[in-house]
Length: 568
Image (cartoon, rainbow, N blue to C red; front, side, top):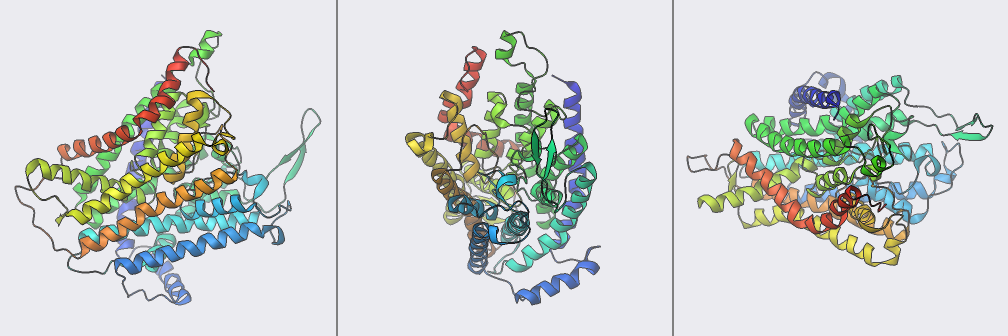
């Protein structure tokens, strides 16, 4: 185990947290409509946008109106991105002359980017025109991230408001999120990445001659601008096929550090933003402690696993660092840090190939996704998922102390419990059901390149990534087929809307309730016992639900590897 890698990881997390706290304070002021240092510059633009779209910034919505606006907005976005791909062959900014995208791939991609999954069953540099990448995919990177944050804001208002049905304005929430947060940070990061060599050009692809005398096509494009929001928005969809393992997306160790920072920065900031907005920073710290505990356990297992020599290679006399599937310019530590981060934050970007990692590392990545990616989580939806687990924990705690469950001064009745359980259980049912169908179907098995336990891991990971709205892939499984594009699209829709619609409905119920004063009989939700209980609930639900398939997949794969048996 490289101690320098371990020191790097610890220092990196500390710096990320130090940056997240002031950003959280800024975001809480933006979301509360308070004046910030950006207000004089952006307020005129913000008001112009409201006039342009016909939105009344002073008119708030109830939960049904908010959910309706959100759903219609997403439906229109899916249709637009779908059609754009179909007709890209007739549109400008297509120097390579790419034809329209096949219908099932186009549908899958449209759903993928609108639901913030950003799963890609295609190779971007051989499929998408510059216009499609920018107008379709990059725009949705902003919008889908803003929708997730807007949903979180609704749930926060549900906890903080009382005796009302007003929960804010959807159009105001997404406008402020993009204008004041995502866009400025993306511009800064894009400039940093371009300075490191990430390409940003409209020039056509270049044909170069290799040392052997053969011709090689080198793809280019406006990548830096898309990579920045890909990271900051928990999107993960790469401009190029191998994502941030590609030297044009992530060329140097410096760019790798900034891209990893971008994966974690806003999700961690939102946890502290939650504390600021409910005016209980200790509660935000308690939830951050829950997430960080789970993150540290997963990081420890994955880092230890990847620091071990590969038993198969050892048997043939090959020793040294375990760099299988990793970029030499990054090494083990930064690769594992990225992998754990991207699967806890529903980002989906990769700087190493998950299929080549040790089985226990793959197990950690799979577990991170199957929790609902509540360990920091995607923009907004990750914290929402953690709050669902908190509500479930408070129900269990209420049974233990003989009191009606409550959290942040709100009584939690049967309706609230149902709305919290649906987003936890329904995605799990969808993952296991569709994975079982794929395993039992010739169409599901046709793209499988590895047998036995490793092949099972690849299929399970694919559906975890679909429904978990993650977008990363184990690889080794060819998924650009009608079967996987359609079932994958369905899984993405279930994973996205089974979380955000119940969250908005839950907010509507909570906002109509009054506040219950805290008493000596109330279960404390900012102390170590609360943290331990929620951590235990998250682990138990994930373990009990997925233990059988994890045993037959990555755990059996690990045992085979230790015994010198190659399964994939």
